[in-house]
Length: 363
Image (tube, rainbow, N blue to C red; front, side, top):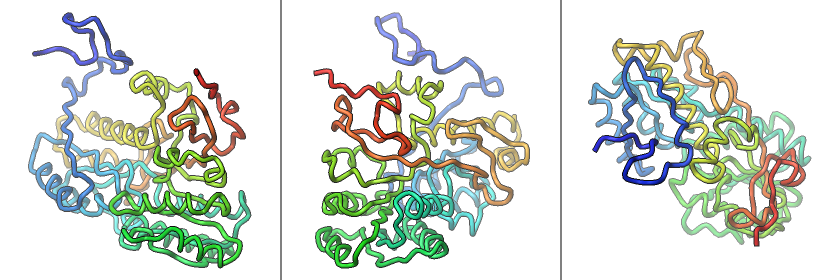
């Protein structure tokens, strides 16, 4: 059967929401063929997927794995086979310290993310002592912790303790008791890319904290699972650093279209993945009919630029890192007509109405 997914089919009396969000522009006289591969967030499967992809000459580039863990497992496969990979979410600084010519990323590196988190502690909540919860076996979490510690100590901070949050037998109650015994301090949550029990345990830390100590979390805490905690007194001292929030520009074409398509706002993962696709599409378009290895030169060129949802995208010479990436601070507030009756909003707003939300219950 041959029909356009986003056009009204004669057999049905419906049209998908956001049906006109795709324009009719072609890509070098052709349509864009997309192949979706699932690595299941498991290293061996991710490697198998990557080894299969690089053998297909019709695949011109890859929107690579979200997590640093899966990216580190596969980046050399793509690089050695001269196939461009653009990661929306791999932020580990290892990829800056040991760059690969065919790797590019949309997300801010851990250097920048750690700096933003330190700024929250020092300048917003006036805390210069902290206990870090992280996964030492994770390329993302361990690197983030390392960069955070460097920045925090540089600014005069003091790390009271570093606690492994990834273990299945992790005891949040005893961990919080250690925090209580250490005096006034902040809790820093840096779970991994959901390759262990770290996120589940991080949520238990939030619950067990009981709203007493300030908590600063990385973007993995930006999750419906956090909102599901559902108790305002547990969430009111939580600040999360994220890559993008839909309320940054709620009237933008992207925000309005995604609202139509999915019936609600999307998270930063969707925005970053969309931007990764825009980068790769532009690289393919400008490369024309040349070999796929040449797309790397396009993306690495000094004049390459994409105006993405998350801001202007340009890459630093020699690293594949993005030149600039503004980060957002968000918090949790009550909003009765939202799922779980809570919502994340930018930290600069005192209440959801200031952010343009109507939180009156329809009941």
